Length: 186
Image (cartoon, rainbow, N blue to C red; front, side, top):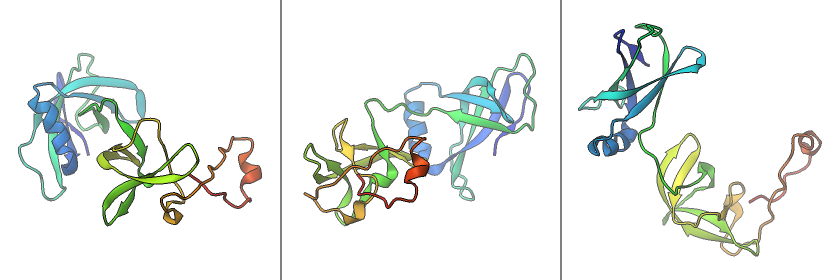
């Protein structure tokens, strides 16, 4: 929940999950002010920009999050206390990151891995390290950029297995193929 508490400049209070605190503190220690973007209600077209003022010094155990306060210029007085707001905080920018769908990651007794497809359409397991995960996408290290990874059907694979990549469906062909059995996928 976000609460607006002052008019000009206006303060916006919000919470950040406990697991994301290291990302926040990394940039905060670098003395780089964290930028926030705020939109109010259902109007995503009007975006107000500001910066983080305060990050609380303790985690609220009842919500497993830390409270953050940002300040937004409000010269036109278009923001009012108590309004519902959506806050976007860019805590860190990952450079040269490799992102894969989180469902491509296999958790094995030896750690996390992905199945990478080689030029002969054979798979090899590659151990990886998950750097960050958000909304179904994981940023990983341990594979080369441009590698093809298996997303579906991983449970039946063993290193050296030959696979056949599923054909991408277009909007026109999707209804016609809906009843067909699923081919082997990558």
